[in-house]
Length: 296
Image 1 (cartoon, rainbow, N blue to C red):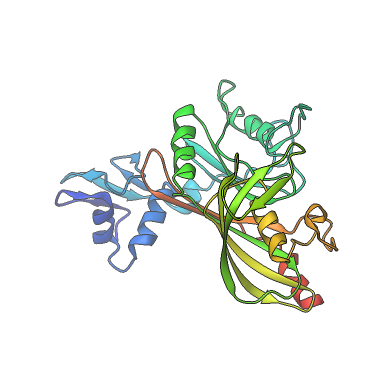
Image 2: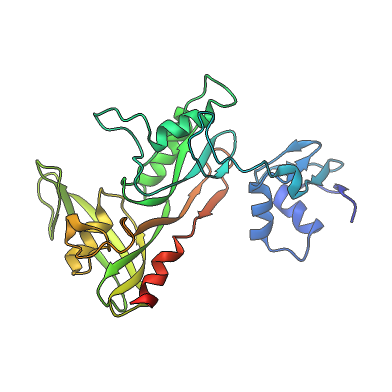
């Protein structure tokens, strides 16, 4: 097959790719588009619905052309791990122990401050817009926007529960099976999160799906999917079940085997606000999580 294919009929870009790569699944072709590997007449196109006209030429870029050197530090020299980035948004992996944003104490080393440093590397006028947050003690995937409009579009998806959010955790105890926790959470005057079986003033619905993946005599490795994103939702829900997260002393944990909260945001899936494509990012939890079920 030639590196450049001239189209002989009008088709959507996804259908055009399907004619060029008949043995590839549509999922694979969409990933190719998301990765910026497809050019139409020299222009990189991300949208599967883009209309390719007869006579236009499609070129597939090699992986070496699109894969920049991984960014491991901000311009200021602080560590950063970029999972996905285009001109509209970017996705980072947050380490445990780092605030997402500054509190009223105005901390100057947060994931957001590192994100701002990152986008300003190429253009001092750019900014990183906060879409959602992870607790300081939680690690994993978090998305930032590069414009106010993209931020609002993404936040609407979170509010409408159109974003898939998967976590992995280690809980104390032998937990089997799977289930759904649904109740209402509210913060008290001390900012503690309390759970209620029915709606009370100021409370918000919280829904967590859980599934035991690997059970040991002391710890259990658990997969969790949250339909809502309340503060400390997973921590409160699992503690109320009698299985607090390892390392979560605030919610009743008796141990801290890894010197951190054993909770990791491992998957984030959302619709790209500009291209309309589904973006799915996976960041595996630390191997030490699963090892806890084998070592004890």
